[in-house]
Image 1 (spheres, one colour):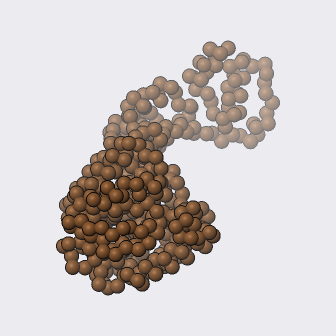
Image 2 (spheres, rainbow, N blue to C red):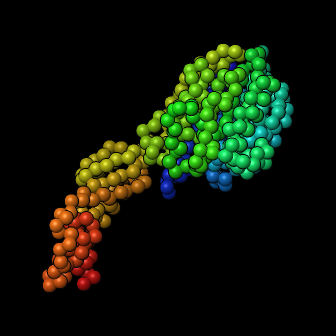
Image 3 (cartoon, rainbow, N blue to C red):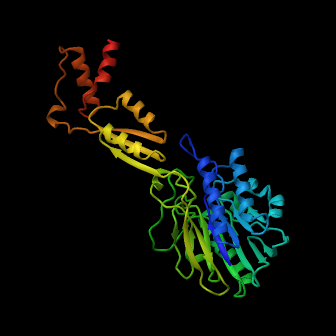
Length: 401
């Protein structure tokens, strides 16, 4: 059985004031093309489907259209869970209609999906936090232990836990193990899907995505791969935006990566989906397929306007965080020229090349008898680490006088 694992679509997300919707449309089309080209039998979407609890109409339309295309109108099952950016009730709401198209939407942790049957597959077993699917083309089932994002309110409501500091790890370990012991024998494929913060014990703690809503507060939400039941052959995770396998080759525990670079801390990252080939009681075969759509993000630093303009002209279809080092403050006409040259400048950061202040001069007396313009220059230098004001600023000062 061939499975496509993707996560962290963040549909509707913007980069500051720059809309990414057109890029997201291209990425979603590419995901559908990859699923068809790889002839996958099942699609798993591990959370953060939208970027906020109240996505735009355009983002919702793109979401439903993509799921329908991925499901091939009910021929291929698609299972999607809520992440920490998603409203669980909004994800659950269209489920009665979605399942008619082969789409299973899971908003809450510990949710119990009702049994149903379509022409090409059916749910043959269900429990809280668990579904077992039988696809017509296979003589063995696939079992999916699923955990949508759980904050402390959802933990208390759906898992019956009050103490978050100890609840999440203990509760999930017990829940997952009980489900695995009850349903996950060697006569089927056994998969875990969750949206959470997990790492291998003893490994370096991965950073959460820059600008994202954090899952981890202190160490209360930090989970270790050791709590995954031994019966699980593959774990499909969402939340971290860079691809990584925090498990082993024999039993992968994988963050598939986000669908786009969503912050400048992700500049240069390759985005991908993971394709998994699975058989009962065998180790999975996996491969990553790179997502090529979407604008690349760059963090660039220059020390003169000419080189900056040249690079911007050579890289028009990009989004840029631009730092410009100079001896004087950035002139208004230079700023205007930069924005006219490139429409993907998200941040423009002027940076002065400060001279080291002579410690012997820091306490020198102020000469009040000098020209007012020279006095202003001395004042400006005292406030800006000995930096001279540029001509534009001096002209403004003259106008004020």
